Amino acid sequence: MLFSPARRIVAVACLGLALGAGAAIAAPQAGKAAPDFTGVDTHGKTHALKDLRGKTVILEWTNNGCPYVQKQYDSGNMQKLQKEAAAKGIVWLTIASSAPGEQGNLTPAEHDAVVAKRRAAPAAVILDEDGTIGHAYEAKATPHMFVIKPDGTLAYKGAIDDKPTANIADVAGAKNYVQNALDQLAAGKAVDPAVTRAYGCSVKYKS
Image (spheres, rainbow, N blue to C red):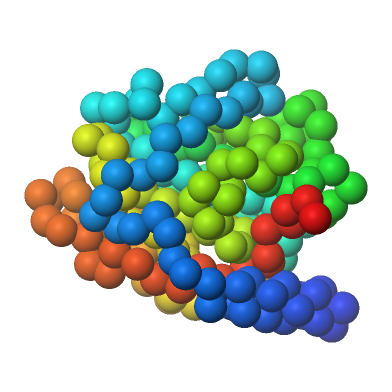
């Protein structure tokens, strides 16, 4: 699937914003405790990271209007990862930090409709309109991925894969860093790489 010229322009612009933001001091640190957070999902349920101790947790920053997010979902790649993770007891939380009036800011019902249309399988979609969780993790891009070990340690942060494009054809040949992290954790190994540079559209935080 190829993108129209207009969509390619949007994708390039988004990528530039996200990569440019990467110059800031990175936090949190891989190998250290992941920042605790509490968030409410689209069904009004509260989720706290501290309550998930004993489980591997994946955080996925999303924006349904971002071509880089669409690449992962249109290919079926993100849904595949989510379903495989759920089957292993891993908790996958999709986080939407787009501020009101910004691309990707949806009502709870709209978020649920997007999940249903994509046949996605996160454990929950967390609403983060004020950016509290996003800023705590210094989430730069959509998608920006974080893998947290059962003891609360951040094992991986960064890009979903090593192909920083919005081209769906690149998914098949990409090294998936999230899958790599999960495989290494399952084998009792240290995650390598533990940090990569996130790519995608910049997270649409409120001003």
